[in-house]
Image 1 (cartoon, rainbow, N blue to C red):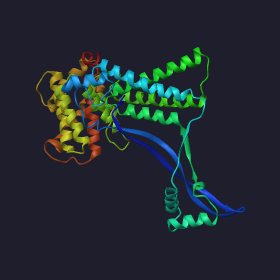
Image 2: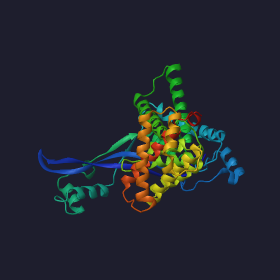
Image 3: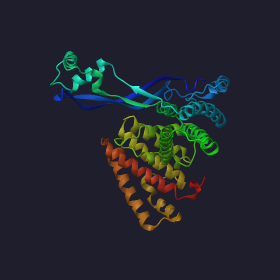
Image 4: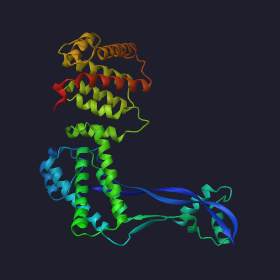
Length: 395
């Protein structure tokens, strides 16, 4: 079985410096900075999947035949639900058998991460420049004081099941469509949970506590990740693969230093689904921003997106500046109070003024924080125009 056509497997480790005291006959000679090695993450990288999206329909017979021969390609975006479920079942079944075998083993199965003497010497020399001016002096020091190089290191060890669960995590992460990742994850967890129930409740046997705890922590972390991403991807609504891929990519890039509001962007994609022309302009604005492109064009497309939305929503051909009274009447019909309508109107007037002075008749956009603010306003406008209308928020 060729699970995900994976090629690269890497283990990421972290080196932590620690002070090691060197003594002879009870007399302290030196304090040397040694290193501890800690496993961080086991990663499997798929074969250039995200940059190579293809459609099953391009070669349907070949792809379908290989799927039934247990070869599943993650970069095909138009698998049917039945095909995805079929693939998820045989893959997670294979994973669960391996994990289950490790979970019920009574013996401990630890793996140890170690370093070569040369790697240890290199790190010690780097961190103790006043004591050792070159690598050979470390060897001489250890020889004089009868100290083993390896004694300067504290090794990390971990259970084989930890490594295998990280491998499952990596395979799940290679799935570029969130719906599929969720399906695979929950199916795998369900299979292991069912085995645990049968093992403990029916047979009344107790598996090793430490191994069950490792799995439980992994399980909880995966469910938390699903819950978090679900928050950003228009949950509980579903949409097609391409939209989902676009949204999932924004989550992949999420970081504190990223100025975009990920949750609002994903939600905005949802609210604009009934307005494809306006949505296409919003997508262009996001793409300009993500690619560090022209900020002016990004902001201009935000304005166009809002203007096109209003034209279709209010059934007229007026420019954004001339929609104020129509918007107020529209919101009043939806039960929006006077104070909020006035706030919306005044904010939109300032929004138009900014666009006119800095975008339509100028090229004065060079501050990413201003663009972030305009993104936020535009998305709030869009949500407030569409969400209160039951015609569009009941699906």
